[in-house]
Image (cartoon, rainbow over all chains, first blue to last red):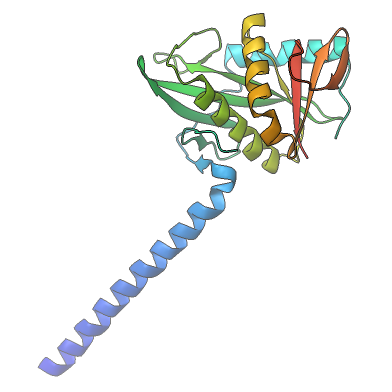
Length: 74
Length: 147
């Protein structure tokens, strides 16, 4: 009985360690794949698309290209 | 690019970026925002400035004087790389909020031009026409495109 319990404990500890290693590896892969060219993806970075300055700059840029025409592409 | 840069963070859609400038005036949150302005050719506008601490809104007229202009501009340049990789390498329009700022951008582009010209095509607008970027020439606006 005591031997069986010890075996069960050993298996449980192995499972815990294995799960931790796997989840750490999974997290590392996720971070790496989200970090293309150096940016760290963060859910706390919010959108500023509707900020008055951004809206104004976008409209100004549209007006500028209407006047200046488009540059040559690569 | 070997210039020092700040660690920067991107939103899930890679359109918004933030980082902290550090210097004599403390820690200042900087924002870089890309917004589409045309479909064909695909052009996005780059908006850059400080985050107003109370409202969280982007302000492009603040002078933070944190003695780290090159590090800031190198970080902004890196966001162009990230954004381009996620949005099909569009043309990115860059213009300062004032003529002086546009001139500062020009000086910064000139400083790193030799390093980036193999990977990016830079054009400037002057006298009513677009031309490929040349150092020591004053431009009204710039566009950058990853090759």
